[in-house]
Image 1 (cartoon, rainbow, N blue to C red):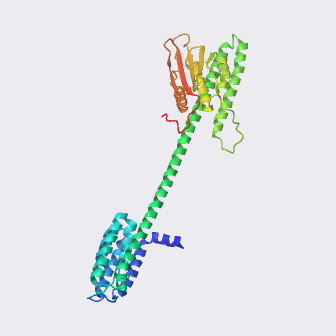
Image 2 (tube, rainbow, N blue to C red; image 1 turned 180 degrees about the vertical axis):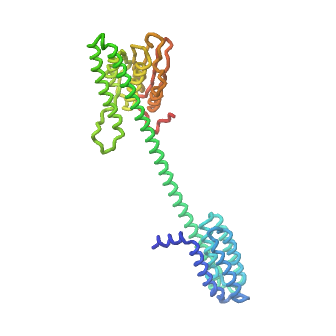
Image 3 (tube, rainbow, N blue to C red; image 1 turned 90 degrees about the vertical axis):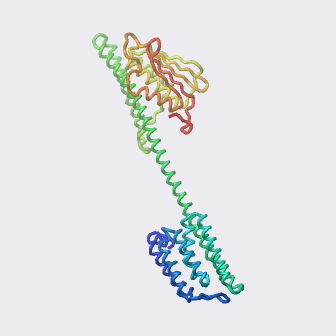
Length: 404
């Protein structure tokens, strides 16, 4: 019932104002004929009070759009009614009561309070000044009554405004929280897409580079060393099988939650470094691994990042360098691990190991930055190419990661 009435008020404000003005004018007619005992009655009959009350009630039709102007007009007419000797009852001050409520509901507290107190002082002062006696009934009608008529709507209007402001603030906070949630979701989705794209790039680039090198070597040795060629082709089969397996595991991250058919293999890390080195050995690149300091388990994300940086660096050497020997150096410190992948460039001027112009180095730098580390890559002074990464032993949380 209350909800229906509130909806009607919201949808039909003009009908509400017209009905309210007619009702207040109807009760103002007998109110203009009321004479207080012991007081000065109106000297000009009831008609001036009726006319002034009609002006006040008509002005209420514009109270929603112009609350200040309407309140000033109604206050002037109401003061005139009291000055003419009419008793300041709720019957003749009804329009002023509504105007005070509207002013408190639609303007600030200072404006409403100042206006109400000034009008109240004038009405009470005129009412008491025109009274011939100071008995209890006269005081009640001319002083206590107007205080109740004006202070009560002031309090109710202020309460309605405060409640509406509170609900608006709650709604704005909820909308802001929803927007932030959506932005955070989009950010996380974008980050996940970038991460999966990096993994796909690393897997495809690594295995295709190895497969291409093995196939080229096998084709070169097919006539002169058929046994060696068949061995390389067997290793090529293993390379393509591992490529398909890693691709399936990486793309499996995009599966639905209820899809349980895609296996969840452990993410690669430095523990798989011997297998990685062996795969490059089959492609004709000798990889020498050395380690300094006491090795210890890294955080999973850091371990994966370290593995991918070594993998991408060796892949770039295979694709862009004539080098036949590469060196991987791991340096373990208390709170970080340093990785250096170098080559001597091989015989002849050929392209260096980072000169592909693709997304390999960009991906390595982004991976290192994502875990709070750094990476630099460039030609060595004595020839060849070098990739050096420094990674923390423990990856920072998303809140702690302030890297751009």
